[in-house]
Amino acid sequence: MRFALIERIDQEHQGRPRSERVAIRAACTALGVSHSGYYAWKRRAPSARERADQVRTERLRALHERYKQRYGLRRLDQMPRREGRHHSRRRLRRLARTVGIECVRPKPKAKTTIGGPARTGLVDLVGRVFVPDRPGEVVYGDITYIPTASEGFVHLALFTDGASRRIVGWEVADHMRTALVTTALDAALGDLRPEVGQLVVHADRGSQYTSNAFRDKCFNAG
Image 1 (cartoon, rainbow, N blue to C red):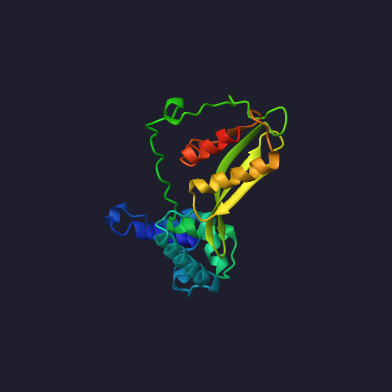
Image 2 (cartoon, rainbow, N blue to C red; image 1 turned 120 degrees about the horizontal axis):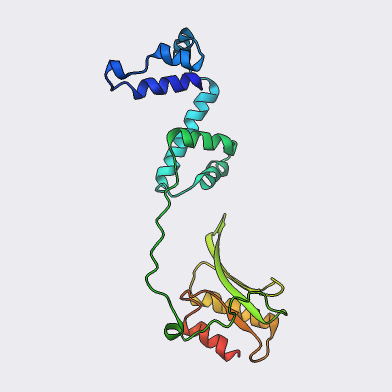
């Protein structure tokens, strides 16, 4: 590692005037290695591990560019494993740092509009009391996605009971249309069988939950 650092310093200083460069002998002395040992290291052929690191690094570069620099190290780590190429995550991180691979994170979007009762016709009946006294009083709706080996990404709509944290209704589909959440709600209503006025359905203000079809289903079920 010290020899590699000396080599990098030498390469970075190649374009500078000779008076501003760090001499190889001075760098060797500062890092506690011999001048002759450094040049012997430079003449030595790469070891099997170094050659393997070079192959993995090029593979990382290719994956990084293929996915437009959006994948972090965790996702980049999964790609070679799927191809049967196993390695430690620590080694992957070391190689990625060496060549400066970083995930590009998009800037958060500015929130310019906030939906309200006047816009959606819906009000917050939970009032931040997220855990009711008894099961069957409040259910929370959410949508997530799951990567699968054969079907790609699929979307999962869930309804979770606020008191017991039990999943009372769910549906999986390859789309995020309103039918995904209305079908999951049907399953939740079939499980809980609430009386009129007993159950509150709480979700975010996504288009599926503020749609007429979803709202009407909630109101018609009481």
